[in-house]
Structures are given as C-alpha cells and as structure tokens.
Image (cartoon, rainbow, N blue to C red; front, side, top):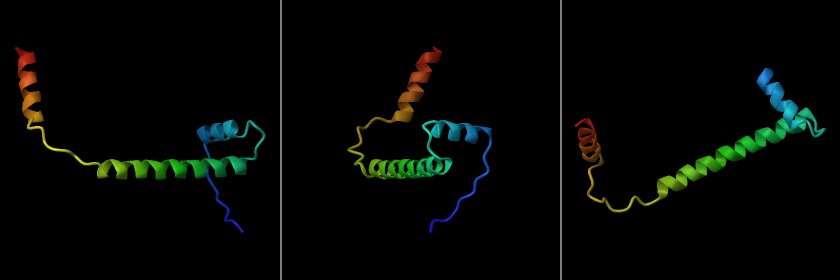
Length: 78
C-alpha cells in the first residue's frame, strides 16, 4: 500500500492544481504526476551538470581575460 502525502496548499498551489485537473483528472493523480515530473526534471538537470563538468577544458589560449577586461574598461573611460 502506498503512503499518504499531506501538503499545505496556498492560493498559488490551488490554482496550479485547478489547472492540472481541468481535464477531469483527480487531484491525487495530478499531484502525483507533478511530483514525478519535477523529480525527473531535477534528475535530468543534475545529469546535464555532471556531463558538462566532464567536458574537456581544452588547451589554454594564452589570453588573460582579466587583463583584457581591464584594458577595455580603461579604453572606455578615455
């Protein structure tokens, strides 16, 4: 048997549930689906962050970004 989850809703949450149940679905099914979809989005985002962190940085191009920004700002002030 599944556990029961209790939430305290506010006006924004109630509006969201109303939107999710406009097709005639139950509140329980809508909330369950929303929780599952939110978890899937978080897992995908975490996987994308991990993949990005594994990307090779490549070779340095020899440009000192801080020096370039400082030089450009100096030129703008003149």
